[in-house]
Image 1: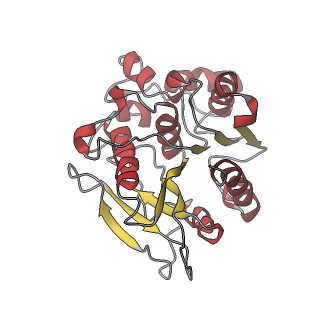
Image 2: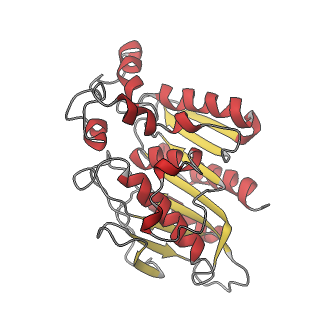
Image 3: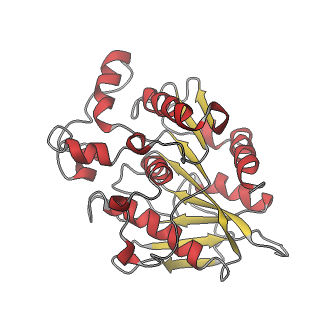
Length: 287
């Protein structure tokens, strides 16, 4: 849903890099506040099949903005879409935005040591990838600015993000829930990578957050609907299992929403939003 016109960002359309008009972000600070210390940050990454979407029309931004009432700054970012630039450009953008916020934290009253990502669908994929690939030079373009600071984050919320692109069709064939068409030349993932999945296996591996899972990954909260016909629920199940092996079950929360599809009220409801904010509070507040 569009953001209520009464809730405008405190800073709008800030450029975090200069290669594209897409490289901008909005910052929302808690309303009616007296900020006496730097605020923990939630970066919202919109979905849209890597091909469409916008930071101001991100339907998940409305529930994420509830974090303002808990003392968080919320930052909504745009990134280059597949019609403009293919992978790895979008993950370069996400990490450039993180570096920009960390480098300029004092200007915007942000805590550079408490930054979380919250993405849905394609945005969930990018959030997960940024979370697990901290320090991976191939997924970072330091020429975009602020190369002296880290793009690592302290927590990740992944809502039904595609993780292993080349596994989705087989997972749908086994479950019978969705169409096994992600390997097609015109699929969102093929357009994102610039070639059919079968033709670019190295890019498929590089674009997968699961490729980089290691003991230094941040805590993750992963949610997925069991009736999702666009992204198989097994994507999140397998990813969570890999994270648990690497960082421990106490650092990974997987919640499957029974009967839920690809997004919808089950995710954006006040009760579910409260669960996510409780997770973020437990992992960011004590840092």
